[in-house]
Length: 458
Ligand code: GDP
Ligand code: ZN
Image 1 (cartoon, helix red, strand yellow):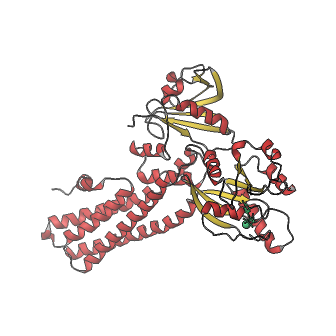
Image 2 (cartoon, rainbow, N blue to C red):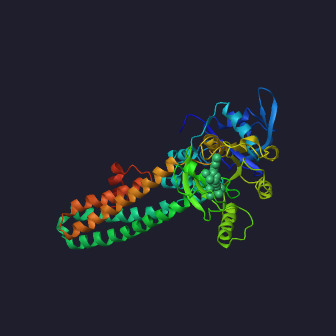
Image 3 (cartoon, protein in one colour):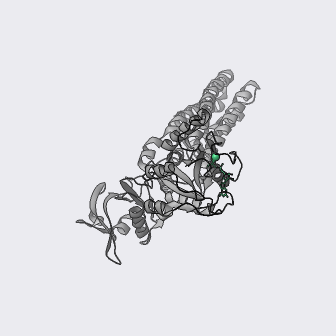
């Protein structure tokens, strides 16, 4: 069990009606109890019950937010530790204040994926499931942890488990033949190895294929860059990607297609879509691009609305500003290297300052502020960052490749008259690499496994 207690925002940031701060660890209940005023002391609350009350700063006695608090005592919780979930009002302010208060009371900020990691370390889920949870959270920025968890329950594990079972049975059979050579069933054994290894190899191939499809699901936060022609959308995408993938021109409306680029901002994976300028247009080619960008706008998890500070606010932009107010939108006021013609007061009235960024895509000035605004929006655990998942996926794929290689070696060896006990090593290796996907420290447990499952009458 972990010594320290961790917390993070478990729901997506944005303007939802509620947001959840999740606290997990031995001090979860105690820490929150100090900040929570309700009829019942939280320490007295039964597990899996919800309490109504207020989060209060105990130093100033200031009321922070009216909340519902759920207590889930370990091991019957996601992490298998004591978990407290505080449902606050939606929007970043309430949830951030509550989180910050919790963090001042003996709780530290969770690392990306740490709740899931704990669930694994505490034996609540296997490694593949843990990885699936992280994947799911990465793939949909606005999904709550609970949903991801349910979906992650054993997709890969359920596939791998029967394959391991089949290999274990094969190993057991082969073991019998090694130990009782007088049975003299070499040929039968070779055939048995071939057919079983081939079956498992087919399944592994399928998993490998699916793992490629899985990449599409792990696309990151879909981020649409929108704005009028010439505002600097492509330039912004280029500045962020630091690569010249989109064509930048001086003629308005020349970015006709959506151009994509995946970037990682402080570990947050973004899939950037540069869209054609949003406006009514006669040009049929451009029209298609405009329609596509409206689609991209609806699907986007995050929107970067690019405005040209060198020009007055256009009617289209005014509409967009209104339309996007309730979405996760960051206003990018571009071209600050040129004289100011845009009256930003109008924007500042409708959008909080942390959602407005002033920059020059051309000169690269202010890009860091944008990065900060994006990461701020997905503050602390709302979106789990990439590294763990990326390595994990590579890990799965590598292990599946290893499994396939060992199986192929075993199959090949049966044709070459290699002694059975040597072929056994390859089969065992494939069993072990599959086990590593589930987080099994396979080596030592192999024999135990065989002999606990199969009574060979010895
Ligand atoms: P888009 O149509 O919104 O994609 O705009 P582009 O990125 O193609 O840029 C349109 C024009 O504005 C190009 O000539 C860019 O070089 C120029 N531009 C973009 N960003 C800036 C900036 O920050 N400062 C200046 N001075 N020019 C910029
Ligand atoms: Zn463009």
